[in-house]
Every structure is written in structure tokens, then in C-alpha cells.
Length: 197
Image 1 (cartoon, helix red, strand yellow):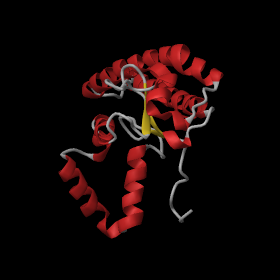
Image 2 (image 1 turned 180 degrees about the vertical axis):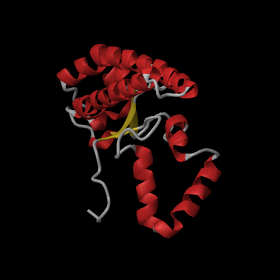
Image 3 (image 1 turned 30 degrees about the horizontal axis):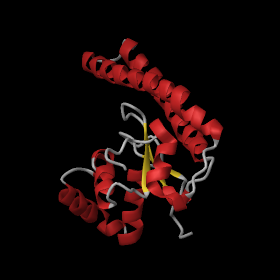
């Protein structure tokens, strides 16, 4: 492995901010720095984001998977684990899938993400109730608190009803069967692809 590169994970989180060092946006930034050098990093990033019409994190969150599905004619090689409201997303490369992949997504990312959300909620509650906090800080904290609490409820339900049962079943895939047969085996854990037939 080249010095400075993060090891290739089984799963890549796609989240609204840098909750994990190895999320897809963080890895993309690191790739640009290593490939083109720190001196050219800003110029290259600006070029890419201008071409995309948005910053790289927003592109990965909103457009990457749709573009990927179109490119692969609804037979994607990257599969998107996605909670019902989209507050948690993680990509896997189907050719690296193992029967414990769902457990890795669950334990290494989803549960860790919930822990980080809970810590952020505690921090925001201190701002909301703190005597030293300004009115604007309190308003901003309350707004984010509401959003993160909804995330927690969504993720707890998704873990209980979808991911945990799949993780305990250790679902096996036969890649020779293709996307059409294998994708539905992970059901509501994956983002729905309309027209996958």
C-alpha cells in the first residue's frame, strides 16, 4: 500500500458531513492530494466541483448513485445501503461482498454513527441550555437537535427491523447470478432501484 493511503474498506460511508475519516468524500480529497500533490489540490478540487456544479460531498450524497445506476444500466457494481430517510448511507463494492458485510456496515458504521450522533446531541443540548450561549446559538442548536433526534429514531428502527436481521442471517450471494438476482436478497437494506428487472 502506498504511504499515506487509507486501506480499502469493505464499506464507504456517504454522510452529510465528515463523521468518519474514511468516508467517500474524505477518501476523494486524499486521492486528489496524493495523485496531484498538495500544491495542485485546491485548483483540482475547484475544477471538479465547478464541473459537477456542487461540492464533492453534496455530489456523492445526491447524484453519484443515480449517475452510477444510469451508467451501469440498473445493474450497479456499487450497492448503496441506505436508511429509509437517507440519514445513513454506505456504499459497498459488490465484488468484495462477504456474508459478514451487513454486520460490518451495522457494527463499524451504523452503530458508530449513532454513537457520534448521540454525542453531538449532548453537545447541542449543553449549548441550548447554557447561560453563555447566545440566542442565535440556541436557535441553531435546537434546529440541529430536532434533525439529529429524527435521525436516531429512523436509524434505531432500520437497525432493528432490517439490518440486524440481515446481519444475523449472514446472507450469501453468488456473483454468477448477477445483480438482478442478488440485489433483492438484501431487501430494504439497499436503496431501491426502480426498474431492476
